[in-house]
Image (cartoon, rainbow over all chains, first blue to last red; front, side, top):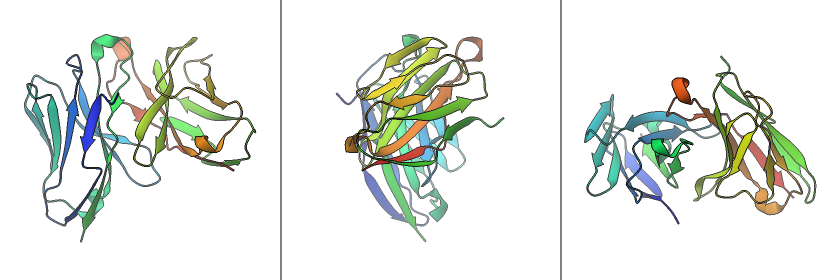
Length: 114
Length: 115
């Protein structure tokens, strides 16, 4: 059972475009929602994260939008650049569960053309 | 700090061979975990540990063993390699308790091919 569903699986945009990656979750106990960025040949690294007490968080060109009632959250990349080409994973964690092990979406491969 | 280190970076095995993937972290993190990454499948949890001497199974544990004798090290053992275990393996760590970090810190990965 896939607890965090991520879409689309792949995404191609032109430089300057605004790619949007969406995630939906089932477990209402999730209370931490990070996004990880992975470049080819590297391990994933935290990009930005949000908690359910806010509806939006911005860090530079990256924005998370969070809809608690719909159990959905999304990543927007403003003014995308070729250097943003990477695989993006959303995740969700239940802090009270004790293990703090996140559940990951299946990833979105983003290509930004010059 | 070196963060999370993994060795080897690449490995080729024959079916039936055994090997150990090494993982070490120098951040004094309690939590460590192993993931495998396959195309279209994302990151799937194999095993994890919430502290020295404590391990538990993740989503895809079959064919893998782990142990956690120290806080720093969390090796992953393939008992009898199969072609289905061809994948990229990532180790990750995070802090707990008063050192808690919600962020997972990933190693650079080990690319394993089983022939």
